[in-house]
Length: 173
Image (cartoon, rainbow, N blue to C red; front, side, top):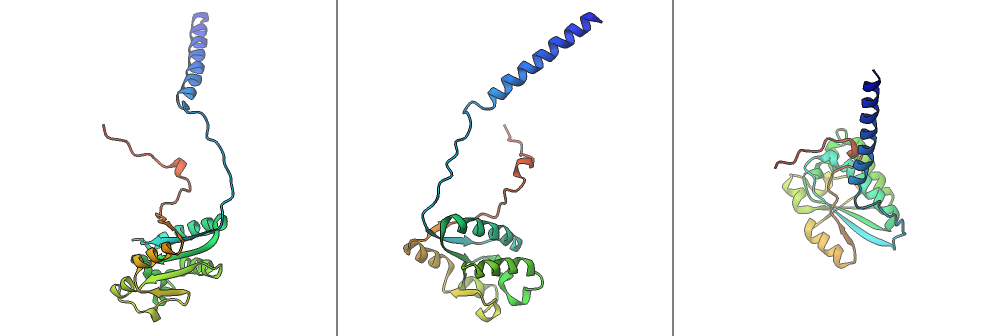
């Protein structure tokens, strides 16, 4: 029994020292620095082209979280399948999303829609909610805003909430 306890103690000590070694192994670059500085006033244009209209809920968070520190004008240029969310005929289906986006509009965010994409989807300007401004074309509008000093943002609709707990894909050798 005494021999068993000595072996058990040795195994415990080995596990504890292995834990220390592995902690050092996983942080060979030290700890991140923090630089929580203020930003100057910056105007930004968001390039929005989402296949899934519900991704506009993620856009809402991106625009809201970006507008606070930048303090400048925010413009969303929509030119993809998500534009159907802005159609009056779909209000009941997308009410929660469109109400959030209208809230952003009330805060001063400018929503512009590509006329080419809208027409290709079978819509006309009068089919859209009143906070939308239809412009000739999406990409040229983005380019135009960039010439006016707007910073380009391509907000991919990938939320980071709970990403720490998501399964990581296995890399193939």
